[in-house]
Length: 325
View 1 (tube, rainbow, N blue to C red):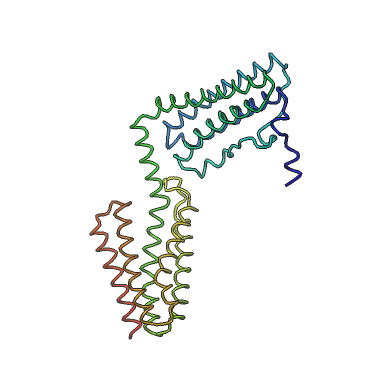
View 2: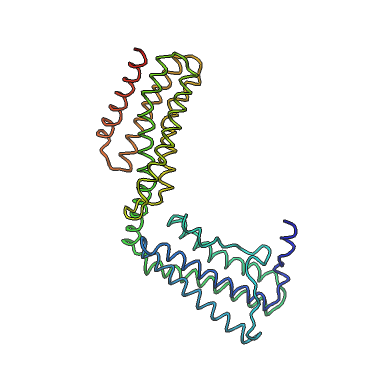
C-alpha cells in the first residue's frame, strides 16, 4: 500500500501541461461513462439515454477545446496522465457498474460527476500560486459549472413529465418482476409448504429441538430447490423478468426465511410456549403475504387474505392433526 501511494504524484507537483492533460483525459473518461449509461438505458429508458448522449457530446466539445488550448501553448505531445496517477484526485466508478445500478442512482452519479469536477478545480485553483495555472483551473471549474447547467437544460428537453412517469413505471415494473414476484412466490412456498412437516413433527414428538431441526432442514431444502427452479425456469430474455440469478436469489432466500419464521420458536425448550409463538408467527407471515400481494400485485386485500390465510390455516391444521394422530 505504501509503495502504491508513493508512486502517485501529488497534485501540487503537477506541471501546467500535466494539469491540462489531466483535464483532457478526465473529459474523455466522463464522455465514455455517459455513453455507457446511454447504451445501458437506451432500450428501457430512451428519454434518459438521450440526456446522457447529449452530455457526452458536451464533454467531447470541452475536451476538444482543451486539446486546442494545449496545442497552442505546449505543442502536439500530450502527457499520458489519468486520475489514478494523482493522489487525492476524485474517482469515477467503472462504466460496467452501471449494470447493477438503478435509474435513479445513475442520474445521481451523473449529477455528482459534474459537481465533484467543478469543486475539485475550484479548490485546486485556491491552492496554486502560479497565475497562469490558477487561471487555467478557474476556467476548468467554470467549464464544469457550464456542464452542470447544460445537463439541466438537457433534462428539461428530454425528460418531460410523461417521459419520467413512463420510465418510473417501467422501473417499478422491472423491480416487481425481478424481485417481488419471485420473492413473494418463495415466501408463500416457504411459509405454507413447511407448515405441515414442522407442526406434524412438533405434535408427533413433543421435542422442540428435533422439531427445530426438521424445520431448519425443510426451510433450507425448500430454499435451495426454489432458488434453482426459479433461476432455471426463465433466462429473462423474452419475458423481461430480469436476471435469473437475481430472481433465484430472491426466491431462495425468501423461501428459506418463510420456513424459518415458524421453525425458530422451537429453539425455546418449553413445548407449548414454542408452539404458541410459532402459530402467532405463522399468522403474521400469512397476513404479510396478503399485504404484499395487495401492495405490489394489485390483488384485492380480502381476496388475497382468503386465499393465503385460509389455505395456510388448512395446511397448519393438517400438520397438527397428522402429528397428533
